[in-house]
Length: 436
Image (tube, rainbow, N blue to C red; front, top):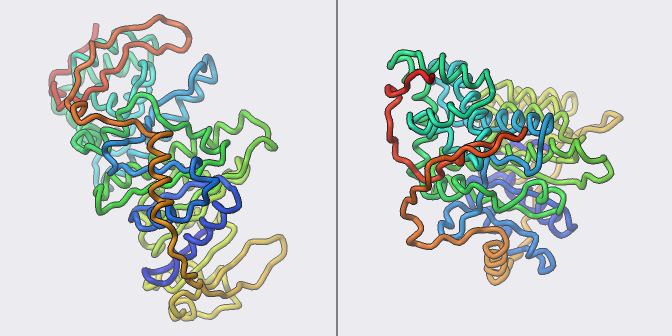
């Protein structure tokens, strides 16, 4: 479902009641909220029998961070399964980081090429995290030790020849865009505490299969726009990867899972949007809401969304571009100007069906329910106990772990242990040297 509507016209209210219905029906669902109000409101309405199903992900809850490692591999994979898993994680990570790269980043294709090699190299290590990529590009001593133990010829040639033999200025151009983007999150306590944990405290495959309720409060006001986008795109990438892993199990064993994303434009990635056509096969059902189609960075993402969604709901929008894009879906039943002049809380909806149907109109009605603050507190307490890792104040000091050590060489090839400590830019890229 794709919902479009300007602020104050009923879009979030519709989302809230849809989410509430799914929770009360016992369904599994995830909510990604870039403002925080919707997420906090939902907590007050959780039924008592579903309290333990709730995972409340709030990066601003610094004392109880939920670990979410984007580069975490499934355990006990070998051979082709391991290679396929690495490819999935590589594509997901590139998709996440591409979202936070500026449109005006020069040499975008070159940056992606370097990033792909850095991710694949990080995945040969034991317990890599997003910040391992930063270490590889910024710490010459760590990089040399890792490259020395590589067995993949293509990766070794990349670091020894393309990076190692490049001039100083060329090295900076090749890697600075990546280290600048990832490095800034080293200074975010919320990002560091969640993304630097080598072991995720939640398993997204279990979240989908166990019909868990994942509520993500990624408030831009508290976290900042870029950090909020990083968390949102990371959760989408983890859900996408978990859904794709369902290819290993039969259709009848795939329980439906419902994903709600408010202000979808903040988190939309090309990879995730392109998956919409396959999402039903994996029983992942997505509801996206945004204020205007013009908020999407790339118009082709809007085209892909409109081509693949089954239901389109349109509230009043202040953007003439929205009506131009959406009106053909409602014609000849709705004339030009009708969408732009809808009253608040009124909408038109087009439902996809085997036989063509006329669009319908409706209104969202606010039901006066107060919810329960004690329920919200109970949910928060349960989520912290079951899914978070308590951080002691003293533990915020940066701990330097031992140097990476190579491990044995089975087919899984997880080698030196990554240093997960926060390193504040130790060696300059100009120190990169060819590796013998």
